[in-house]
Length: 92
Figure 1: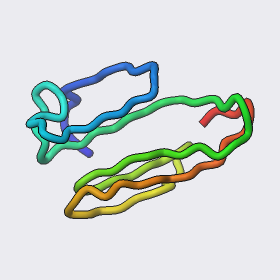
Figure 2: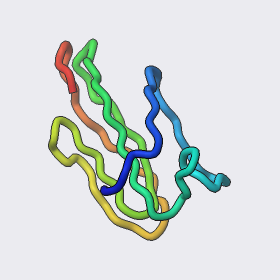
Figure 3: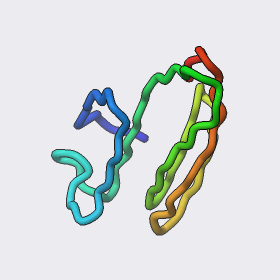
Figure 4: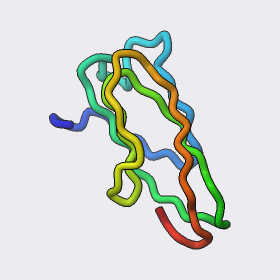
């Protein structure tokens, strides 16, 4: 991940993002040769297993509290279901 930031957005609700059929990831960001980074903070209101769902063509990496939970490189989009245990009152 390198280069200047060209788009930022603050999201307060769960996101579902797809670029299927589009030509840009964000205004001014073509679908090839770019990086995207999402950062968030989550505080669990109960102890349970949550599931991250994602997929990417190219490099995909999911990190929680600085620890890589899932990482892969691929030539086509592979959907991933990544279970993760959270504890009541703890932030991730």
